[in-house]
Image 1 (cartoon, rainbow, N blue to C red):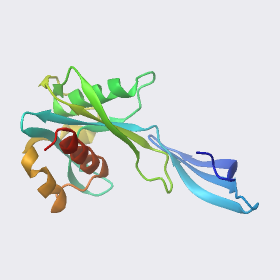
Image 2 (cartoon, rainbow, N blue to C red):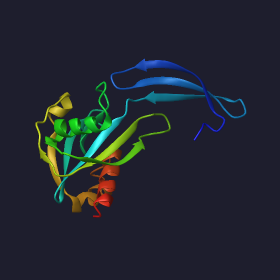
Image 3 (cartoon, helix red, strand yellow):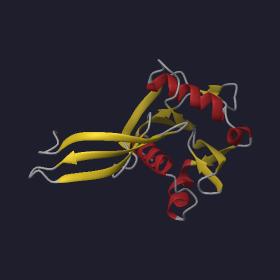
Image 4 (cartoon, rainbow, N blue to C red):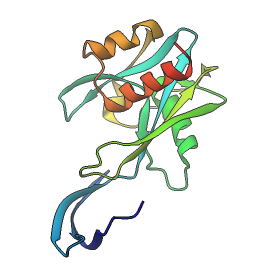
Length: 181
């Protein structure tokens, strides 16, 4: 779908960080009105729901922005030049959870926060898990722990607020639906 009469007329980069670029973008509205918006550019991300029988393999890691540990599905940003989404998903699965899967099934793609950010996350389902060699690539990952959770407990962990991370909630619910659980 087009911009319905909206046109980007400019963009000024305010900050280029390790992961994101923060800009002020200017748009012209359908009647010529001028609109400015904060825009965060993100390279995109992948996430994997690794299912082993009746369990899902999750990671618990410290998230500095929230100043606490979070229980999540393995995930990461698209930050390796030339690597496609599927390869990135398998890499993150091995690095964080220490498992690999011969085949991944794409469950969905979603924009994380369309009010200000262009990040697109792709979530995959992994089954037929095989051992892999974990490899921490950040300080937080050096201290993460891998936890197995019963698929029967997933909705309760979402309902009681134990799991609040968007990609994890979306991924787990899509996986349960796909697996007809």
